[in-house]
Image 1: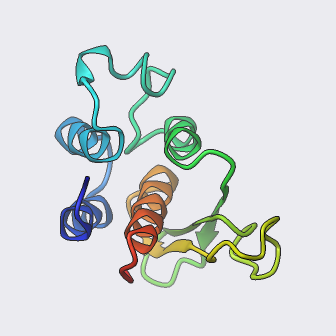
Image 2 (image 1 turned 30 degrees about the vertical axis):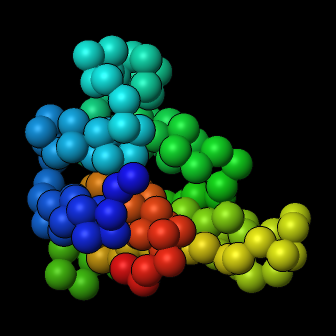
Length: 138
């Protein structure tokens, strides 16, 4: 099982970079899917694009890692250049009380002011959701 500290280290790399990063993508997929990457990306994501630069690939990763969870991405006002906000939640875009099973603990992963693009923002939110799922705040 992946530790929260390992996920935090990946999160720092996602939020601190820009553009496609194949080494980071491999590390993320190993951490989240813990499978043989020789079949990646076709087998694990179903797309040829990179999860750090393609929103379609990032969405496919979220849907594979946390199926049925809500996700969203939006552009932030350009205060210090263009940045992005993303959310991944088991309760419908982070709105408490929307979960089908009220006994389920609300888990929300949010990433704000990520400059690396919408794909990186969504992957960052996914990592924060996985950290929260392990019982630790990001």
